[in-house]
Image 1 (spheres, rainbow, N blue to C red):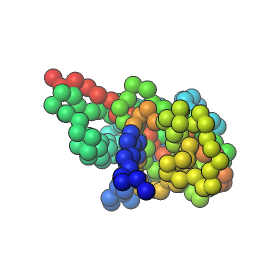
Image 2 (image 1 turned 135 degrees about the vertical axis):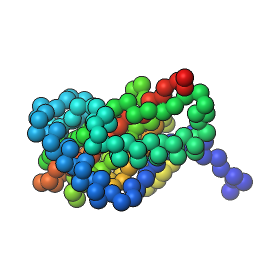
Image 3 (image 1 turned 60 degrees about the vertical axis):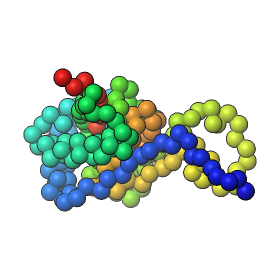
Image 4 (image 1 turned 135 degrees about the horizontal axis):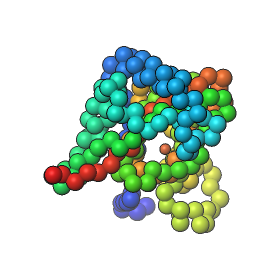
Length: 200
Ligand SMILES: [Fe+2]
């Protein structure tokens, strides 16, 4: 037995359960449905068969409570990571909704030019697709021995099963995607990016 083991270079994904979310979720869902009506074409990014809204939702008055919750959670992460906020501040740079109908998914991607990214879940029917993260250490897969059962140290991929009212925050460089929605109902989430701004 070794005397100790160091788990160096950990990759954090934070989960925040948002309090008193009923009213917030109703407001956000209404806004997303409204936006879907006026912008049926949407944008094309990682979405495969799904709808991606414009990316400025955080600027709307109806998103004020949501952006406050994001800022509070980002501050907790910044504190944990010892970011020195006398030299820079964090800001929400983009925010968009995703509506994935049956068979829609999101291909593997990351979010360049951001420091943190996040997602909040508004509607996640059973089997509507997990959020998966890929091992950010590609060299770790250059020779994979036969493995009985994958665990946290050996799995090349982690799948998170979304829950309504939960906000995830993760490093923007972390590759991720969304599994195919195999349910008959839509899966709805709101994503966002956090950037850095120099303090004046
Ligand atoms: Fe993403």
